[in-house]
Structures are given as structure tokens and as C-alpha cells.
Image (cartoon, rainbow, N blue to C red; front, side, top):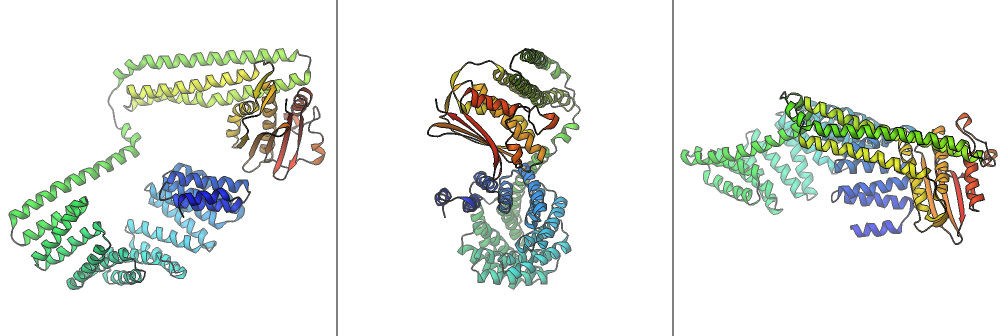
Length: 631
């Protein structure tokens, strides 16, 4: 099925069927576009949560984890692993627990941490075994064998591979042949050539039966290697020629160049030099035409060996010079790449070894640092001035006649001041770290004009963020007259003001806001109502310890009214409490509540704008519905 077919089927489906198609499409994209594969898996995960299907959510989490692994997003895998561990324990789901540790092992392996990978593969294998999830168990055992093989722990490697093969044969999976080949390589490297030969031969027979010619050619080549180690050159040459025939049939130029050199080496050892040169010439042609640098290097070495055996020392020396020149260039490039990788990985440690003085550079950059400090001082003064204005506004509100409105306004204002303090703390910390980094850079020989420019730019962005925040809060408390405005803007303003607290509380927010709902009134009235409902929802979910808390806000225009819905995934409200929700001074928050927030919301919606506001339980939580008449 092609990409367009998947898109069409997804558009025509819904529910669990749609989620399954999204995962299939994600899997299809895994080898084509890993970024898009992640997006499709994420869509499926969101759908599973809307459906409240936890088993399907686990499947989506696992799929998204592997999509991100293929895409190299290792940091984004960590929260998925944590979710899988929590859900696996809650639901006693062995697949979720096994997948969590398997993902941790895969990431450790990618980061070249074999000990950590082994530890997590063992945990994953245990959970897969307990859940009788045999294919995944086999995969873990196979990976454990590969790691021990790489570490040259041949006995351990063979043990895990044998366990994996036993499960593979039980499942009758084609993976058995690959595992058997790996076991053969372990025995070959451990000098057990007879056992290696038997394993290679079994794999070759299976590959031939499945008409997998590339795999068959590789297995037969390994059989030839084993015969060579057992000092059986005739059988070795026969295997190499058969592998050569298969590779030529499927046009595998890379392996064909390699086998040509191996055949030539056998002919050199048997002093059949003309046959050896024929295969070396073919191998060289393939290597040069297909830019197979490593194969070409080995072929040049074999040329030198062949000519030396014939006593043609001058010609042999010429090929040896070519070999050394190409080999040295190749190794230099490989070493430089490894050094660059190590330098990137251990950059901090390398800088700690540098002791050159940078005082002259520091003096030339003091002016820019001074400007940054001045901006910080000005920002703190503006902060103090704003706090003074808030206090003045609170004093003014206390003198107003409408006590309920004043108390509500004061409560909102107090929350806003607290919110500013919370939201400013992070950028102030960032700016402090940026200033501290100048001293660190000086000490570790990393201070440069580019570095300072980058740090100053980052600091100014943080300062701009804080300044924009002040403007947003000032606009909220700024008196407004009646005007025509878009209700979507009023709701988004409330969301923007509370965005930090929602993120801090790890509350997911979903919105579905129509863009054509215009209304005559005071925009901040609607903003205050939405703020109140969102704050109440946040407090209720946190107090109840709701797992994966969610607020969903929708805005739509009906035939004769505008409808706003504010849903939260909270606990059900007792029926006797529902009837009292909008009574003044009634609160369920004890000393933490005033009991006037919802009453004020009712006054604004029903008294001022002749609308209706109702609240109560729904199947998944609690929902408040606002209905405003079209004007």
C-alpha cells in the first residue's frame, strides 16, 4: 500500500481502526521519512488517549519510542520509557515493561554503553519471558549475544545466541538462519572451525531453500573461510567460486570485489599466479568503478603479494607504495573522524586541560558584559515599579462598592502577581547562568567574541520575553470599553496568561476554537471568566491527584448563540454540590477558596450579557458550558 492509500484509509476511518492505520503508516514511513513516522505515531498516541484505551496507548507508546530511536531523538525517548514503566506496573502489562527496558538498552547501545545495554536487555528479557512474548524475548537474547560477541566474551555470546535460536526454531521464524550464522562467526573467532563449518552449512541450506541468494552467497563464503582455516584449499576455492557465481548473478558489486580478492589469494598460495591476477584485475575494476575504497586497498596489497611470490620485486614494490599511500590516507580520515567524535563527546574535559591565559580578550569584552548588567538592573527596577502599581490597584479596588467584584478582582490579581514571580524566576535563572558562563569560559579558554555575542543575544531574548510578559499582564488589568471582539482572542489571552502554570502542573491543554465568533462587550470580562474556570479545573485535578490531567476548551457558533465549553478530567462532583456551585461564598477549597469566583462568572455571563452558564458532571469528568446570545 502506498502513501496516498494510507492517507485515504486514515481519512475514512475513526476510533481504534484509525489508530491502527496511523501506526501502519508510521511503520511504512520508518525507512523513508523517520520524522514523519514519529508524527504519525504521535497522532495515534493522542487518539488512544482520547479513546481512553490504555492497552492501545501502550502499543502507541512503544511504536513512537522505536520511531524516535530510528530518528535519533534519544532525549525524547526517556519520558516515553517512564510512561511505559508506570502503565506497565499499573496494568501488570509485561509487554510495556519489557519494551521500556528494551528501549533503554537500545539507546545505551547507540551511545556505546555496552554494560548499561546488557543490564537493560536482561531486564527486558525477563519481562518478555514472564509475559510469554517469545519473539521479543528472542530479540533480546540475540542482542545480548551480539554485545558479548563484540566484547569477545565468546562463551557468553554463544550461550545467549543458542537460547535465541531455540525460541526462533519454536516460532519457525526466518531469523533463525541469521542467528545461526552469528553463532558460526562466534565459533570461528574462537578457533572452533569444525563447529563454525556445521553452523554455516546449515544456514546456507536454509537460505538456498528460501531462494535468498545474497544470504546464501554470504553463508557459502563463510564456509570457504572455515575450510581455509581447516587447511582444505580445494573445498575453500570451490565455496569461493560458488559465492562468486551467486554474487555475480545478483550484481552485488561490493561483495563481488571482496570475493575476487579472496579467490586470488587461494590461487597465490597454490602458485597459480595467472588465475590470481585475472581475479585481482576484475576486483580492482569493480572497486574503482564503484568507489569501494577499502576493497581497493586490500586488492593492492594482494597485487604486491602475488608479484613478490613471482620474484617481481620492483613491480611488487610499486603496488606496495600505492597500498601504503591509500591505506594511510584512509586510516588518517577514519582517525580524524574518531578524534572529532571524541572531541565532541568530551569537549568539557578537553577544555579543562587548556591553561592559556585569556585576560586580554576578557578586557576587550567587558563593555558588552557591562551593558548586559545594566539591562538586568533596569529590568529589576521595572519589576519593582510594576509590583507597586499592583499594590495601588488592590488598594483602589478595596474602596469600591461592589464587594464581591472587588474580592474576585483581588484574588485574580494576587494569582497574577504570583504567576509573574513564578514565570520570571526561570528566565532570571537563565540570565544568571549566562553571566556565570563568562567566568567559566575565561577559566576554560573558551572566551571569544562569537561566544560573548551568542550569550548576550540569548540574555536579551530572555529579557524581551520578560518584558512581553509584563505587557500581557498590564493589558489584562487595563480598563476597557465595550467593543466588538473575537471571542477566540479573549480565550487565547486567558490561556496565554495561565500557560506557565499549566505546563508546570503537567496539565495537557486541548483547544478547538472557531475563528468567526464575534461579540459586543468587554473582552477582559470573558478572559476573566475563562481564567476562573481554568484555575478551578487545575486546582480540582491537582487536589484529586488525577493521572494525565487534561483541560479541553471549545468555541463554536450555533444558529442563535455562541457556545463555550470548558472540560476538565476531574473527579465527579457530588450532586448536592452541583446545585450550590454558583452560590456566593460557597467553596470546596476550604481556607484556599473565596467562594466568589463562579458567582462572579454567573454575574458577568447572565446579568451583564443575558447569557447562561451551567456546570456539572459528564462521562469523563466535569464540564462548564457558557451560552452567549448572538447580538
